[in-house]
Length: 488
Image (cartoon, rainbow, N blue to C red; front, side, top):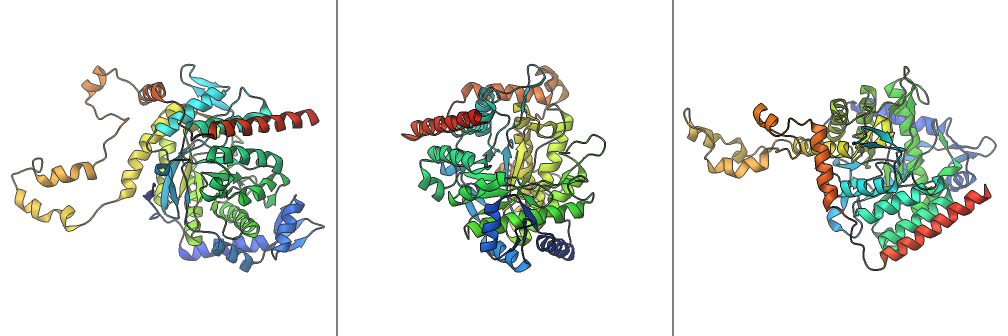
């Protein structure tokens, strides 16, 4: 099992500021409350003790009910690798993991064409195999989508590709109930059955409500996911300046109010069910009308919500390596490094979107490889400095004195591999060595690494019977999608 690098030393809010944000979020949940398009959610919340105004369709949650839900949600749990204990992740505040991709991106960066194009299921397959092979990618999500499949079947094909090509944990989309039921059936088949999925969940389910302060009928699949034992990522996404206030503090307050509603809802459905906070702090660029992926304000917001997650003793998930750059270049690397390093120092549990470009419009396999190398160095930083009598090496320094060196000492032989970071992708070369090796830019070296990995990669070995069960579940999901298309 992976136990994650340790983060959490970076704090941006004082204790009093954190308390003010928390109480402001609680006040919003009581007034004006959450608007629900779903009768099911109104019923669940009313039965659970919230005040529900059926005429206005609003849910008003008192502070003590929120506090009880926070205490009910587990602060620590295991997200399992599918049939592979080496890929298990211990999720709890302060442990840091990094994951490839995000939700299904509509395009795919083609290195040979040097532009984005429509992706195929084969792109999904190769991208998943790449994420599975990279050592610093802890969980794998979609880097593109199965764009050559019928639109209403794409998600089913996406997760068929993921389940067959990695044992690392992933994130599935939770939407309306009939869709979610079929996706859960495919997930259960890949896991070895419903009981195994419930006992050893290898997926989290992402639920995306509507900002500001709304929950949609489309989100009702949340109920089925919780009852199936799937940990929930409750993922409001206010846009600073558009669907949230044009201040970092106001956006943090709104998104925390929304994500805390998700914690309450999950605990009302099943007390003790695992839930991971996913309070996005996206920024609406007033010049381009686009959602930013690398702005300073967004990074400030992510640090703040991570600090609040630690305050609640709950795991948190958020944007890590996603960038606004359009190619796997220096701009992309700088934006990715900034987000991933700050998140790691703050202690964000799960960092997504490694390898995505152009604010999530498409993914790049070369960018995934670059991000894997960046995480390699970030993990060394998160290890910090080991201060002991032996590492201080005072006696050794005296022994070497003024005229010796440390190269031949046993101390150096013992510690240099433990203490020093050695790059795997980036090169430490002289200018002459770099020229002799082809004077290649980082994206060229990354592409060579992609080609090398994919030449050896293949599907994972599935336990007996799992392949047939997955195929049956996929065909049922396709039949459901085709029937719904005929009805519409």
